[in-house]
Image 1 (spheres, helix red, strand yellow):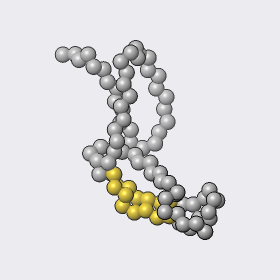
Image 2 (spheres, helix red, strand yellow):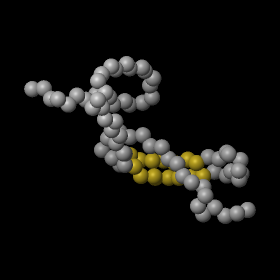
Image 3 (cartoon, helix red, strand yellow):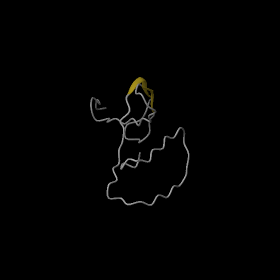
Image 4 (cartoon, one colour):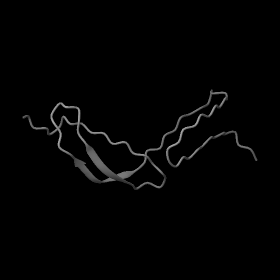
Length: 84
């Protein structure tokens, strides 16, 4: 039995480069993203000089979700920063 819903799903493990060309009617295309669940296990900020644009933030994140996920960490340095 055929469904009226057509899906393309590709799971990738690791980094790779490829080019795929797909031509189709785009009237009913939807872009879906899944938000992975994770827990920051460790976080460390090394010494850095103010306004230098340099510094190292190192973190270890465990995936606590039920599927493979990639995490991008970002933070704001404006809160709780003491003036020199």
